[in-house]
Image 1 (cartoon, one colour):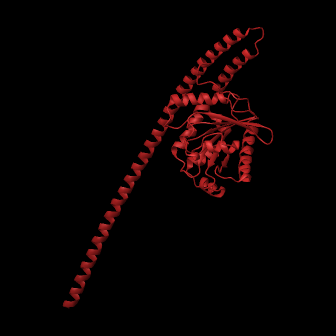
Image 2 (cartoon, rainbow, N blue to C red; image 1 turned 90 degrees about the horizontal axis):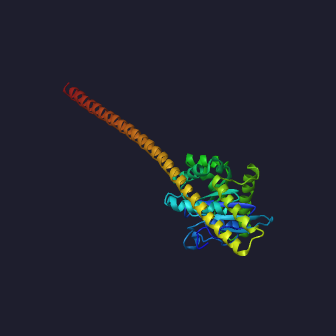
Image 3 (cartoon, rainbow, N blue to C red; image 1 turned 90 degrees about the vertical axis):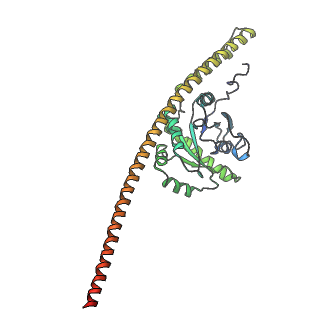
Length: 328
């Protein structure tokens, strides 16, 4: 296709498709490698450059099922432009054109959960729709530094907005130790994750998450398959058909990318407006609290002054009484 950035995305369909999402540096690539059981993605632990574009790798599980893992850059980070995010989201959807069985939201168990993390999830909800939450699993990395008990304690004492997210995901939380070389631990944490993935699939009627963008991309690929099944055409005619379909595919995917970018801009603007309103409300609350403290401090100061005055008057009266007694 002459170097189109949509080339060579398609891999054979899998029984399970997982998408790793989260901020840069939280260990998405390392988690993907732990799931696959090999170094398929360059991770931060290698001290090399981290993921800067969507990648997909596959493997076969012991139970015979195939699994696709899609590693993404920080798609919904505030630092990535809408244009780049749009291209990567379409690329991710193209890889997962048959649907997403689970979206793994990756967080670092050693980092403070921030408002930005919360807004990332809100962006995903606004972009994909509320139904995406039914396929969402929270994965906390750095399990080598934070054990299960400590993670539970952290979540129990977490900010309200994090507790709401855990509740929203119906307590689907998994802790991953991506540094361990203990094969039994590696197998155990993968088994736990797959149990949660299977639970998600069961709760959704064994149907993966789909989206109107995914549907459109799938239609594009379905039209491509017609060429492979063409009968009665010469090789030259088939070659021309392929070129025409590839051109149409590139044009349609570019249109989808533009639509994604536009929706992202609207979504980001909406969330920024909400965050600004929250910030203004918080500043107003802080202002009222400061005024209340100032008023309280002023009342305390006046009370101290009255007390000091009373003490001086009492001391003066006591001295006068002593002097009177001495004269008598």
